[in-house]
Image (cartoon, rainbow over all chains, first blue to last red; front, side, top):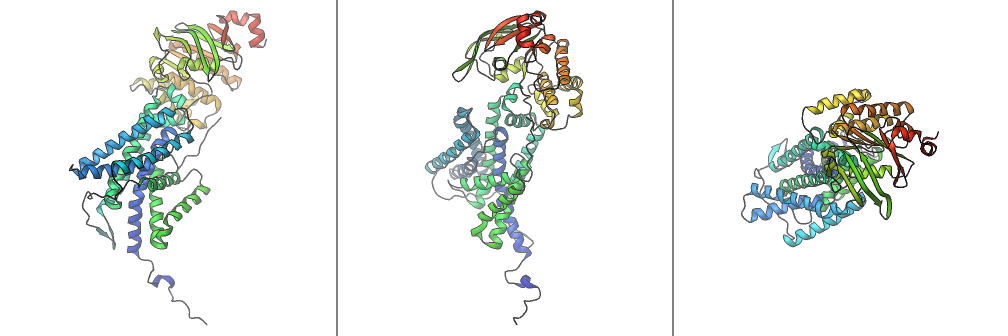
Length: 308
Length: 233
């Protein structure tokens, strides 16, 4: 007869469950998740105004990091370089709307989405030419000394990323829930014809949401680069993960984007930590699919209630 | 108030309005009646600017507005309650009304909203519900109320009675009739010709993109041809 297993099973296993290990994965998940949340927030900004999923959202993040790095490398103070990067990315966002989306006025939403995919490939190529193909990093805001919490450590920059995501969420939440302009953006997406008839300049609303989405994306790029590094091609993965977060949370609600982005990050970090980092993307997407099978509107999405 | 000269419009290669002339004077209620597909809705859309005109001119309060985009026409005081209750379904009733006054930010908004609730008490009861959950009649009321929030001097009403029970039709048209006391001029398009003409000063009859007859509303109601073709009596 085989000997019985040790009385408390896997807990005494050398690779067993440790609080500090769990905390470490948790911190890493929250950090990455906050970046995804920032991307997801950018997605829903444009989605709320137009029903368009802007797949160039990841490129905004890339531009935020890359422009900051090259401006900083040229001798400009880091804070000024970051602000400059966010402003330039805003301009790129507005240009994307004016030059690529607006001229296609009247095209179907699917056609507009394909235009944004084209724009993302274009921006990636442009970055490769204008900048370079290297990985870049600039200094953290509050240094690189890890803070120890419960046996795990977290970088001060992580706290900045989490804070940035929370601040962006709060600002957008207040924008949509409390301001007339925010409601006008929602109204434009809900019924463009009626929005025009109450006096809303619907083209301006689109421009505004592209500018805001670009700013939120660039902010993400600025905050994450000291930890994750940046290069011309970081945008695509970020766009996919942020999109997954936005869908998971329920496309359209800022709160959903925040929670959805964080969840994708946490699932990834836990999978990488406890199973294998090879599977982290797969598990994240499987969980999202399972959630959507049960809740097609995402976790916090409003069901489409419409009388026809 | 509103002068339309030789207005034409097309969807792609098909012209649906062939030179429409029409005039609305200040303080009037004017109806455009006609069968389905006569071009009534297209006419209103051209006036509010959401459908481009391919020829002709529109003057509003003496100003040529033919080239102005829709949202700038609203700012001038020309409002439209569009066909099929184009309300903001994912916003609340109150938010819909607030957006009706999108161009304003002053104390009058609260007063206007009270006025809208006085005209349509049911909207007050349901002020915090999502507009998508309202019944068809309530959505129609909301569309009219929202248009009034933009402080129009002229209101374009597209098929206010469409798809409504007779009792609700009566209620909505009652409100339209009383707009006179609010000094709002009304241009209304209706398939329910008798009900529309009954509260109007003048009427136009439209057929396949042209005005074929016009005159005082009571004369149109009395006209044998109109009675047979449009009033069903």
